[in-house]
Length: 394
Image (cartoon, rainbow, N blue to C red; front, top):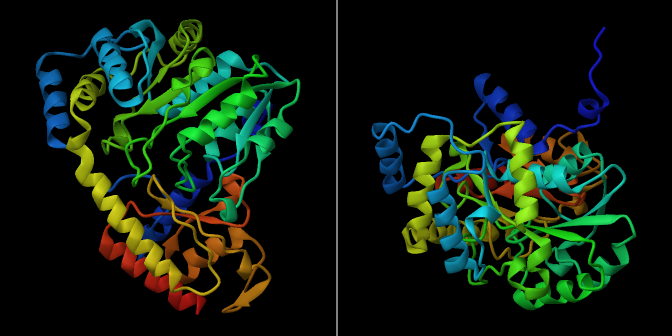
């Protein structure tokens, strides 16, 4: 008799990883699948970072690392926060983890009790709700739509707050929508949150460098919010280091200390070689990765042009990250090629089976009218993918 815990039985499977697995399975069956489902840069890790990793191997970095990360890496993270985000942290406020996902999970585990409430401005990254569930909290979505550029308002934020609200997730540039909140928009949220001193803010800034003219603004740089904000970042997206698994946070020291305690019982310190490589990445000027951002910008414009040629799909112009999040609800209730599309999940499966293009349903992100398409793929793949989509829909 299989007796799994309620904890794991209540935990949903990541829809992005599930779609990627399905696409891989179809590829092994010989189908020519173009995957636009994973948020993973298609660039190689820059050579100067790889050289630092090779040097670390030669220098015999092979022992357990400190649970919260090497001191010189935490010092490099402090310099990066000051340089890029106008944030002053000391090394004891920094915790290095096995990816930003672990940083987020650590925060949820050390702050949330059963019955606490987490606010999720929607659309939101799929793992936020799952991590809240794992921490035995409840979560509440604050909806937005394409007509507002997928942004919530201060009024919506205040209306969602209850006496049980403990944590709110902000993510800008946003996955899945590419939305970037401005400084004035964040300051308006801060004015609301100043009235509720028991609410903490997790600001996920993993896409900070991938923006197109709308500079990233860190929530913790608002003076009244600094002591209540945990800033989470990592090297996966901007430096094309997804598999290196290094994320980090800057937080009030009591939260950082608690996260170190939590991590010490689960994974201990992050990979020693990847940490040494991350020092090189963060010490380098941001201009070293500008070539990737420029390429993503070109691809975004290409994808918006290609989508505009497909009838019935509504699009806005994302200001960051590498996703488009079109509204496809005009297709709901229609039958195409013998397949009835009732929702975004059906639409996503239709594209996979009929066009051989993998996408992710917006239902996974709290936005049931949309699908997410990643343009972290080559120009040739993008052109072919949208040609296939246009052909099956028209």
